[in-house]
Image 1 (cartoon, rainbow, N blue to C red):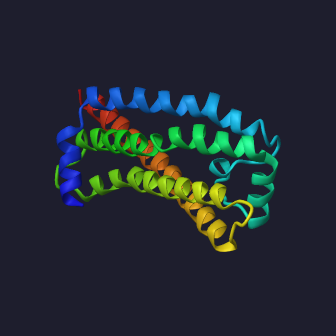
Image 2 (image 1 turned 45 degrees about the horizontal axis):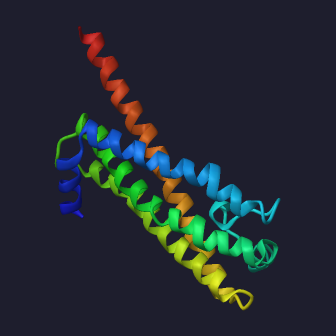
Length: 188
């Protein structure tokens, strides 16, 4: 983990953070405004797996996949999920660099605070595991096991928890940096 933190510290620059932020946001917006609505149009009023931060039941999974129909499941599998296999890596790298870039401005290089830059990596990891589970559910439909849905739901909950934790760490990092700036201004 220390090697990963050291690598992030070397790579963290305003230019790298901005470039990856723009790319990550572009992929996210493609999902938000194109692929997710396209999948959702096949099952109006039923939350997609990706958009269920508190998880889902076996009954919900079966209802969703039935409602999507073959065409909707194909759109999920061949349009939404390929884009969603790009996003978690971008999310993990760009936001780990963002946190590292913020922390470098306030903390010593050997501070344990830099380990918090791994939070987005965990969010990305669980997003990948969620996506793999969704692929398995779609491919095994209509014979979806309770265990598969429970596993997928757990990955969705963990993804959501780590993404939320990232935003909390980011807000605290920005607040700490701003506090430091205000204190520096008062000394002048």
